[in-house]
Image (cartoon, rainbow, N blue to C red; front, top):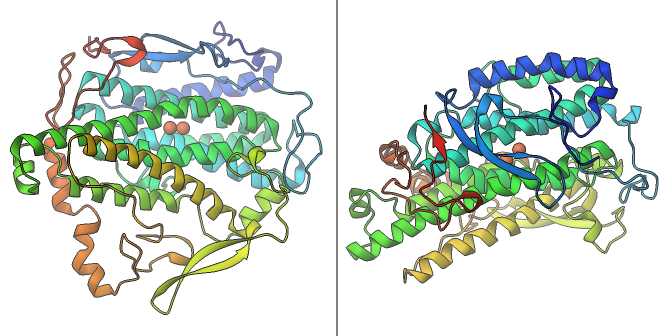
Length: 475
Ligand SMILES: [Fe+2]
Ligand SMILES: [Fe+2]
C-alpha cells in the first residue's frame, strides 16, 4: 500500500485506478493545476532543471529520491500514510468509536471548511514566493525555495484529493476555487490574512518558512488526530515534507545572523549604519522582522475564544497537538484555560472553558516551539561573543484577531497609548526604511558555491552533496 505507482498519470498510493470516476475528475483538474503553476509558480523557472527530491514511498526510511527535474514535470501526486483498520477516535464526544472512512453527514460542512482553509494556504505560499527566484542569494538557496514550492503544490493535491473523493460536487467546486483565488488579490484573495501578505525578500522568506510553515505544522498535527481517517493519514505524510520547510527557515536565519555577527566582530561595531554600509543586516532589523512574522503568524490560530474550536474538537474533526500523549480525559468538559484580555490598561488573564480556548491551546504549543529555535539563533551570537539576545515578542503584540485585536501592546507585553505606539512602532516593526534596505541587498547570486554577502554558506549541502554542487541547471 505504501509503494507509489508512478506509471499512472497521477502518481498515487490510493489505488486511484480502481475508482474511474474519481480518477477522471482528478485528471480533469490536473491541467488546470498545471496552468495555475505556469501562471503563478516560480517566475522564469520553466527551463530550469532543479535537484529535487520526490516521494517514492511513504515509509519513514527512504521515501525520497533525488534528481534534476523540470518543476512543471514534478510528479505531484496523492500519498497517504498507511491506514490502521482498527483505528479508534481518541478524543471528543465520539471517543472510542471507530474512526470514519467517509464523512458523516452532520460534519460535512465543517470538515469541508477545514480542508479548504488548509488547502488554500498551499498555493497561496507559492504565489507569495514566486518572485524570489530572481533574487536568490545562492544556487543552494534557490533549490531549497523550489523544493518548498513543489511540495506546497503537492499539499494542494492532497487536499484536492480529499475534496474530490469525499465531497462530491461541492468538493469539485471548492477544488476549482483553490486555483482561482490569488494571494493579495483585492477581489478574490486567499482565505487567511498572513497568506495575502507579500514575501518580498529573502529575509521575509526565511522568517515565513520558520514561523508560518510552523503554523502549518501545528495545524497539520491537529488534523493528523482527526476522526476522519483519510484526513489524518494525508496530513501525516504532509508533515514529513513540512519539516524541511522549517529547516530552510531556521538555518536561513541562522546563516544571516552568523554573517552579521562576523561583520560585527571584524568591524568591531554594533552600529546599524556601519553594518548596513558593510552590506549585512543589523540585528535590530532582524528583531523587527521576527516581531512582524511572529505576530501575523500567531493570528493564524484564530480567536482565543471560539465556539467553532469547541465544536471541531468535540465532534472529533480536529484534535490538539500530540493529543494521544496528553494525560487528561480527551473530552475536556468542565476544564478551563487562561486567555488574555486587556482591562483597565493592563493585560489580565481570564479563565474560560478549555473547549472554547482550543485555538489558544494550539497557539501556546506553537509559541513554545517557536521560542526553541530562537534560542538556537542566540547560541550563534553567543558563540561569536556578541551580547545580544533575539526573542519573540509577547503574544499580545500587534494582534489582529480575537480579544487582543487592535490593543496597542509593546513587544515586552505592556499596554501602551496610541502616542507611545506611534512613536515607537518603527523600533518594533520593520519600517519602510528597513524593508527598502533589505530589498537593496537582494541581488541574484547563482554561481555554484557562491553566496550573497549578507548570508553565510550552509554547513552542508542537500542530500550529502557538496555546498558548491550544481543544484540548478539553467539551460
Ligand atoms: Fe504545506
Ligand atoms: Fe510548508
